[in-house]
Image 1 (cartoon, rainbow, N blue to C red):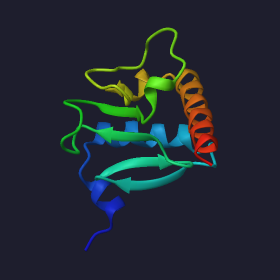
Image 2: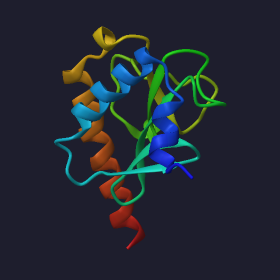
Image 3: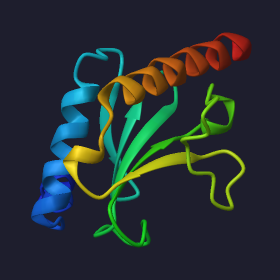
Image 4: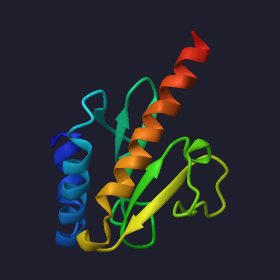
Length: 126
């Protein structure tokens, strides 16, 4: 039987693979994050779920593109309202249809903020 990661990657289109690989490159310097497959989606954990990468090929995901989601997106600093809320109260996302749409600086800031939020939630629970 194929492992979960192999199954994940074999389900993607070429465009989705290039977007996913670019997003993973951006996540690489954040050494406190642990990558796992959960619900057939790439999730990244620190103390709890921080963010995820969900391509449209993984159902019931986005209709198109690749979503980079923040599990506690409602707590992130987003003065320019770049994060997509849709009908959700907690999870907010950015959707990418090509590698060129990815703003690394902006995404890095959201990731740093998400890690801070995760750490503050974890401290409150202790």
